Image 1 (cartoon, rainbow, N blue to C red):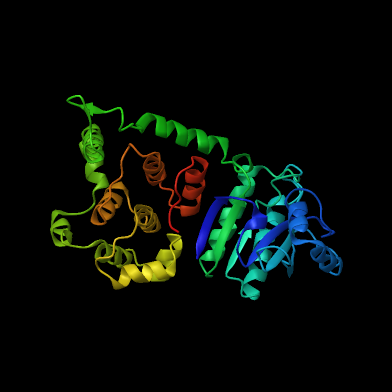
Image 2: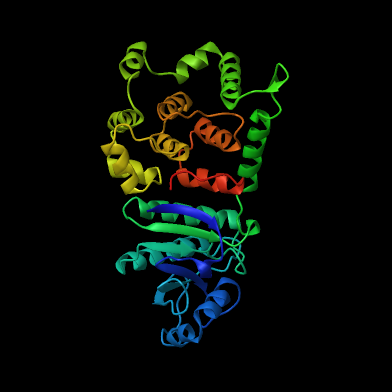
Length: 336
């Protein structure tokens, strides 16, 4: 359960339901709408004829017929008119009504296109913000596997300001481990990490280092023997969060969280550890500590790690916004 972004053909998604960005007639059209009708076959059109259309922002459900998905949930997105015709409100209503209908029908997995971002002209970066905010809000109270499906890279777009800022941040910090040599040989990844970490620590003013490390010496001594699982559970308690709140904000499946809770020596993957650090709003020092307890470290030879650092430094702990950025830069997503 959680939220993913993938590059795929939505008509091939093996989920309980796919979402059709339809027109008000529900009788087929171009783009995603036409592709879904062609893949589902004439039976879908026949059922749609009996639905008497659909208003903008509303949603209606049909069978999937020849599609891998059991259901198709049709919704009509707004046509972009410069933002003055309540386009955002209507687009949010599309996601809310689709997800509400899916929950009502007991659907456990669903795939969305980026509604209204094609022929209807809604700016892609704004459409993406609406999609992720509505989906993330829904997932705080529901268990469902939700996928945003983009057909190609051109169909997905961060805001130019955000993309440029991250790209510049990466350019300033990225270290290609294959170009760093010592005594004529290539350094190991561990050596690169140590060199970069030492450089960053030496470059950071003493006052700033003290501010970033809020943990006392006594705390460090008491926690030195903690496993990753023990450290995570302690942090959850310290932050006053519940288990479900934590794994949902981390975009991590409940079953995986249960494994971590029930096995003090369980070691999840690096992206999962970072996801928990984001959910708990840990600073860079605390994130590095949590990663270390699972045998990992942040490194400037990884663009993904630099993107994570960028968001933590900015104080932006929205895992869905972070995953948008990771996807835009062709990096592995956090959580599931």
